[in-house]
Amino acid sequence: MYYPENYFALQYQAAIDCRRIEAVHAIADLAEKYHEKQGYYPLANNDFNSPDGQPPGTAISVIITNKVLPKSYTVNPPKEIEGELMPPSRFEQEVGRVLGADVKLPYDPQTNFAWEKRFYLYKVMPDGNYSVSGVLFSATEFTQKEANHRYRYQVGSTASQGDHPRLYSAIKNRSIVCAEP
Image (cartoon, rainbow, N blue to C red):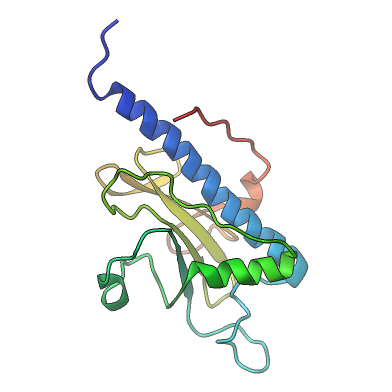
């Protein structure tokens, strides 16, 4: 049987996309477990808050990657990054402190790709709701197209945020089976 030369590359990307969805769900699961113990989502009640514990007036974004961010992100970040940008180590430390465990966030499994926004993004909004997103290579029913072979998959604590994430509490118990890349 003959396969087009990109057949195996597309199979690999499908397997990697499944891992990306798993990672987005794993980060959302950490946020939900944190919420069960604290009553608010990670970084929603943080050092930027007023003394009376009210939510901050700005969003907080955490880019979760093991790659060096482009310098332009400090001057002109992508539109999906809102408010104060915090390092992933701050998120790991805070979640680990509350859950009483050593937290290691997942990183995008793609190693041989250009930057192409291959990171996960945790955001907590001023209203205290969160979202977690990742960029997939291929479109699914629940993604928003950003560019060719770049589709944002997003879950969150509410489905009414600007990017319309899937409500994580409604899907968190669904199992995902990924093929080996």
